[in-house]
Length: 325
View 1 (tube, rainbow, N blue to C red):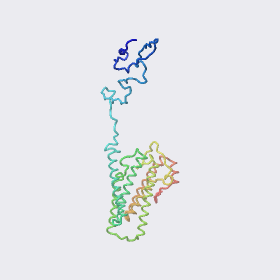
View 2: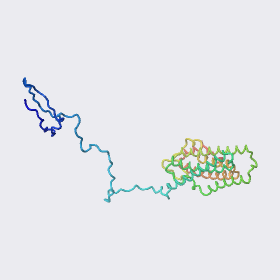
View 3: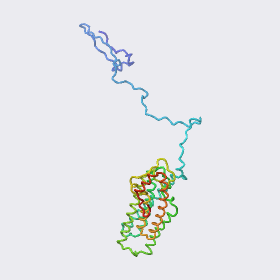
C-alpha cells in the first residue's frame, strides 16, 4: 500500500498544503482484495465559478459631467460677447426697469395704506369720520393707475412704457384737479360740516351713486383696453400701423370710445363720493371739453384709416358722453 503523505503543492492555485480547501482528493478505483486506493486530485479552481472571483479595478460607469465652458479667445472668430442690452430698459429709457419698479412700489404702498385707512374709518365706530372719502379717493386713484399699466403690459406689451401708468403724461392740470378735489373735501368738512341742502338719506344716495359710476367706469375702461389689445393706445395715432384693425366687438359693439366713456363717468363718480359741489361741475366741464376735442380729432384719423367701414360703425354705436355724438 502506498504511503499516505501530504498532497503535493497545488501548482494551479499556487497554494500550499495548509489550504486544503483549494483541492479535493477522490477515490476512483479499488485494486483487488487488498483494496488499494488510487487517488486523483481535482482542483476547485478548475470549476468555473458562478460569480467572478475579482472585480475590475476601474469602474465602467461614471456620472455625467458637463464639459467646461469654452474660454474666450482673441483669434477674431471665437470671441464670447455678452448679449446686447436693450437701451429702453436702462434708467433713462422709455421702458426703464428702475422707473417701472419705483412707480409700482409707490402705487402699491399708497393703495395699501389708503385702503387700510378707509376700512378703519368706516367700520370702526370710535374712529369714524366723514373724511374717509379722502383715503378712498387716493386708493381709487392708485388702483386706476396700476390697472392702466398692468393691462397695457398684459395685452399691448409693445407700448408698456413708464408713461403707461399715466402718472405724469397727463400734464400738471391733471394733478391740480385731484389736489383741488381733496382740498374742497377738507374745506367742506371743517367749515361747512352740516349739509345745506342734502339730508342724511340723500347723502347716502349720493355716495352710492358715485360708487356705481366709479365701478362701471373703471370696469368698462379696463375691459375695453383688454379687448382692443394692440389696437389700443394712450395717444392718438396719426398713422395706421401694420396690423391695426377696427375693433367692433365686445364693449366696442355698444360704445365707440369705451375708454373715454369709462374715465368720464369714473371721474364724476369720484366727486360724488367726495361730496364736492364745485369740483363736480369743474370735472364735468373740463372732461367734456377734453373728450369732445379729442374724439373729434381721433375720428378724423379713423375715417382716413378705415373709410366707409368706420362711417358705418359710427352710425350704429354711441359715445356715451352727453352732447358728444
